[in-house]
Image (cartoon, rainbow, N blue to C red; front, side, top):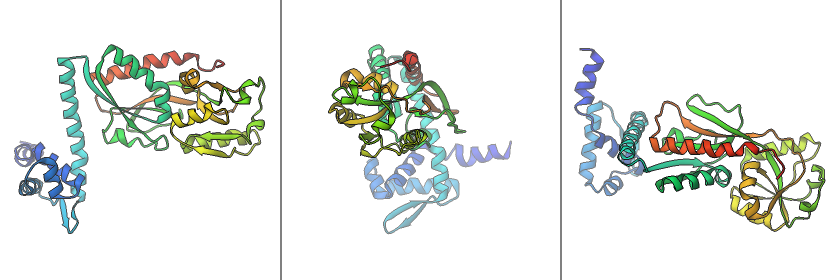
Length: 321
């Protein structure tokens, strides 16, 4: 018998328990045997015994004890990194079974920034829920500034929706570009600028602006103004919240820059209007992002197909609003 197979059979296959691995992850998460025991509804000696069994099986120390509790060793970090994958795949298997038993039930975890949620995501969820009313969608707030997408890599979400550059590439992520989404200068209908048929960017430089807190987008806006020989406008409000920015625009006092897909979904409700001025910004791309070599559940695949279907309706982007 192969030596590696013998090692697996004798040391791991017969002795390593998923329960012990789960207990280790909870201990590391809470940083204390006592807190982990309370969380797991177990006695502290039982938790200690489980960790001791793991350490004996693997032949390494997994936790360092100190006055404040416990700290994971680098052996524990290595084990839990792989363990997260194991537990995630098992959970996906359970979801597959649930879906096969009832194809109209399931859970989808989506990472999305506030801007994306105000644009593409809302109609996707609405249309999907009409077809499958028992499906649960859990949206995790994702930072648009963090292009590492830790939620995907840590398997805390199934899929991410994002606006990004076409040049964005990550070796462990699959990126499916859905459509290009240009940016527009936007005001509320109460703004005096909304009645102007001709507007130059230079005229707007000294107005009251509110921008997203996404530094990537703000840098692009700055570059757009500089390409016209203008200084970047001084923002008066910086906020990731689309609700807050829409409310400010509705007063007629503020200007902002919005993706055209978001403007289309919000223009009527918030009485917004795109000004006839060309920023000169390269369009960002709206994309679905998933983790490579990770098989998504059937219900997540339904969600992705719904995203693609709604994205096709954005083919008219670029026309006057």
